[in-house]
Each structure stands twice: as C-alpha cells, then as structure tokens.
Amino acid sequence: MILLFSILSLLIMSSLGTTETLLKMTAIKFTVNDDNIEYYPDWSRLTTAFSACVWVKDLGSGYNTIFSYHTNELVMMANGYFTGIFSAYQHFNSGFPTKGTWFLACMTWSLSSREQRYYVNGKVIGSQQTPSGRSLRTGGKLKLGMWYASVFRFGGEMMYLNFYSKELTSSEIARMVQKGMCALVAEEDEHEASRVIKWEDLIQLERSGKATNTYEYANECLVNAINKQNEVIEELKDSRQKLENIRLEKEEMEEKLSTKMNATLAELEVTREEKNEMETELEDVNTRLNSTISELEETQKNKHTMETELEDVNTRLNSTISELEETQKNKDTMETELEDVNTRLNSTISELEETQKNKDTMETELEDVNT
Image 1 (spheres, rainbow, N blue to C red):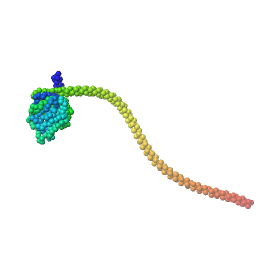
Image 2 (tube, helix red, strand yellow; image 1 turned 90 degrees about the vertical axis):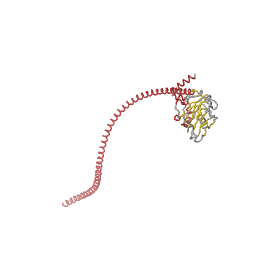
Image 3 (spheres, rainbow, N blue to C red; image 1 turned 120 degrees about the vertical axis):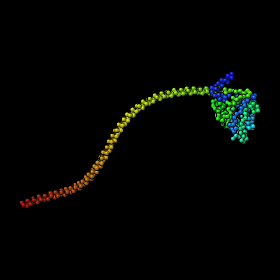
Image 4 (cartoon, rainbow, N blue to C red; image 1 turned 45 degrees about the horizontal axis):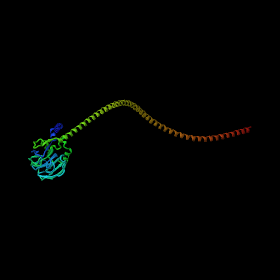
C-alpha cells in the first residue's frame, strides 16, 4: 500500500514539476548502521564563505552526524553534540525540536566575519570565532550520515542539503523557515546562484549501507499542493462564473446604454432642430434689433438737431421776452405820460370851456351893450 502511494506520489510529482523538483523533494532515510554517502566535491568557491542548510528529522540517539568534511574541517550534527569548524567544536544543550520533528539546520561562516554560527529553525543557538586568515581547505571528502572516522552515525531523515558560496544572513535563513519544505515544489531556491553543492546531485550518488529514499514529507507537500491546486481551480471556476456574470451584466448595461443613447440622440436631434429654430429667431431678432438701433441712432441725431434748434429758439425767445419787457416798460412810461397829457388836456379843455363861457357872456354883454 505504501509502495502504491509512493508510486502515485511520484507520478503526481512528475506532473507538477520537473525531475529536478522531484529530486529536491526526495529525502534520504539513514539507519544507525553503516549508511553513508561519500563525495569529493569542488570546494574552490567555498573557501572564504559558505552556508550549509538541510532539513532534518532526527530519529536516532547519540551524536547523529549530518555530515563531516575533511576529517575535522567541518562537522555538523542533528542534536548539537558536536558541531564545529577547523577542529573547534561546540556542544548545544537546548534549542532543538522534539525528536521526529522536521527542522531546518544551517551552519554559516565567512573569512571576513571570522564567526561560525549554527541555526535551528532560523534562530542562532550557538556561535564561535575562527582564527584570523584561516580559510576552508579544499580537496577533502564530504561524508553524509557519518563522521569521517566511521563513527557517530546518523539515524533519521535529511532532505535538501545544500552548500552556498556565501554567508547567509539571519533574515535569509528565517525566510527559508517561513517558506517551509513544501516551497520546494512550487518555486526556485532564492539563493540558486550561490548554490554550489546541490541536493539533487548528492541524492543520486552511490551509497553504502541501507540508506533509502523516502517520500513521506513529499507526499504531504503534494497533498497540500493538490489541495491548493484544487482551491485555485475552484477559485478559477468561481472567478470564471463571476466573469460570466460580469459579462452578462456588461451586455445588459451596454443594451441599456444603447437604448438610452438612442433616446438621447433623438432628444439631441430635437434639441438641434429647436436650436436651429431658435438661432433663426435670434437672427431675426438681431436684425430687428440692429434696425431699431439704427432708428434710435437716427432719432438721437434728430434729437440733437432739435435740441440745437430748441436752444436757438429759446435764445431768440429770451431775446424777444427781453424786448417785450423793454417795450412794456416803454408802454408803461408812455401810458403815464399819456395820462399826464390827458390830465393836462382835460384841464385845458376845462379852461377852454370856461373861456368859451366867458366869451359867450362877453358876447351877450356886448350885444346887450350894442343894443
């Protein structure tokens, strides 16, 4: 049953990614016997800086060596008994997860920092200084699952052991932990350019003992990937339905807009005709207004002429009035003089009448005298 599940997983893995991805997700299970892998890699790019990171499930007891290099040049253990560089070792009593739990172990160092650090799940659990000017030796043998002297064997599983040609930072290692082992299915190693010794090469090397490939964690990752893929498919289906609904709504809106646009165009046509009529009326009004303005201007001219003539008439009238007033004065004077003349005339007439009476009396007397 397990074999069938493993075969099915392999088929699924092949469908999800390349052979390289399949190898990255494959773990090696070591017993505490003589299981080991020996390899003479090219260390030339790792002499002044390196980082070794591996996912580990510790199932054994004792020292549990993950790898050793060049006798005592490098040693890394899964439980902290002996981990060191340049024959200087450290022993860690805490910081490791419960046995049987996968965790990420990293060892980093550089010639410039002169400090070797050991990380468990992104946290530094120990560090030590290295001698000034001391670089990593080349030409040695890398041994997985056992110390160089065929002791302190590894019991458990390891996956995705890589050596990088730089000293990884705490944040970079923390990011590896955050992404988790399953990230190997979907994405490329963030530090691919500096990955010198690669797991997919190590896993294909000849082995000693009973070290075997295992796909247990890969199966879990694949199930998660399939579930996530199914979720994505459902989301895509839902998105497609939403897009279809949006398309239908868009068509309905376009139809409504088309109807409204046609109605608006008809209204605009009516408005255009009304506008033309209004423009014609405005032109007529403008013509009449211009004519009225011309008439007003002519009236204004006539008004000015009349005002001038009126001013002239008024001047002459004022002169006539003055003359009449002078004449009236003369008339009054003459009337006064005439009254005086008349008075004197009446006096003279009275005198004449008196004289006539006297004359008549005298004539009578003369006649009487004559008689």
